[in-house]
Amino acid sequence: MQISRSQLKRVRKPSDSMTMSMHRFVYVYRLCFTQPLILTKGGTMKKAFTAGFAALAFIALMAFNAHSAGGPKQEPLPKATTIAELAERYDSERCADCHEDIYDEWENSLHARSILGTPRTAPTIITAIEKGLKLFPYSGVKSDEDVTVEHLMMCAKCHLPQLDEATDDVAREIVATIKGWQQAYRDEDWDTVEDLEETIESLNIGCMVCHQKVALIHKWADGYPQHDTVYGSMEGEHEDEEAVNMAEAPALNESIFCGQCHGLGPNMELDHPSQCATIYGSYLFSYVAHGGSESCQECHMEKSELGHDMQSYRDDTMIEMALDVKVEGRSMFWRKNKADGVLPIGIIDVSMYNKAGHVIPDG
Amino acid sequence: MTAKTKDDEVVYNDQRIYMPFPGRMGKGKEMGRGPYEKSGLLRETSLVPGKTTHETFEITFPFEDQEKDGATRRELLQDELVVAVTLWYVPFGEFDGNEVAFFEEEKVIDLKSEWIWR
Image (tube, rainbow over all chains, first blue to last red; front, side, top):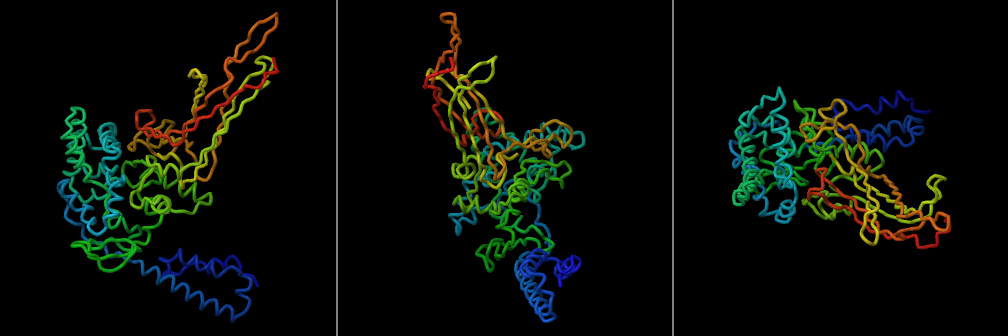
């Protein structure tokens, strides 16, 4: 006796209590249903299957619950009123005492200068204000004084997500600081350049951005990040004055974690959707769709051996890992046609194999 | 891709561009520039993961048709070319000092064999 399509659907549909574990549930189903003809043939087998299935589903559910490291949505911390205050709240140096190697790796990455960039990002933020916000009729921005956190979130959603914990004064201070830095550059006032660059660099994607603020993605299922907890791969107590607990972030090792910022495309949740990257989109719909199975972290952190020094196109290791390029050259006398006669030609064949998990370049 | 003679004279120069073409504000046919304009993709020619992209360049060696004894002979002016293939990552779309060479290779191609099709 074969299982009908309708029966299959019934079996596959998770109950309400299992909804949160649906992905694991479906996986369990796939393990069990490799031979559907046999499974429903006899009553004993059917009961055995039901019991086995329930046990597996229970284990899966328990495993899922073990990941519920978050908690209820907490009252937000008081808004930071200055750049210094916001930088202090997310200062990674306090992690360096115990995690020196990781801190050193991170310090070399662009995450450590996510507002300054290469330094390409900071000027682009100003361009977005001058050529975008100030020219858009409904943005409400006519001068720098009109810029708010909401406006800057067009960039800060990814470049400084903690900006939503700051007042609009901080948004304006950021604009003024970047503009001051640009002016100092033009004036060749290198002391001021250095000072302001340090201020801009104090705003970054530091440890507590990834390991707390954006650590939990599915908050209704996994809970909201807690102010006293640092999220990673371990659970227990954590030696820190503020983040006194460690808990597991279930998606921290998954590509979706990076996809929070590294782009599906336009950020539709914004009133004016911005778009920097589409790289996570190409990962999903091109790389995975064609059989790719490695995660962002596997290539950018593990195989590259760069750890938290996450790099991209400016890094020799990443370039080496990105493409295989072959060039072949030959030459011949080409009997083209009567008009052109025989042409002496060289032929250069170039093949480029993209071995990365995304398109190159991104944008 | 550039081909030069031994005398450093450029006889061939061509390029291919691989990049996303984001739409401007997600409407119309215009490409957007800057994250405040870019929305969606009008076109995508970036190198695709898991795929090999092939390019072929045909370079004509410098030659000259010469009249001699009432007949026309096609003579090679250079029988050797130095070909440089470079794959650049150009973050701003301009060679402004921010470009990064992903790959560089030089090949010498020649036609030193006798040209029998005269």
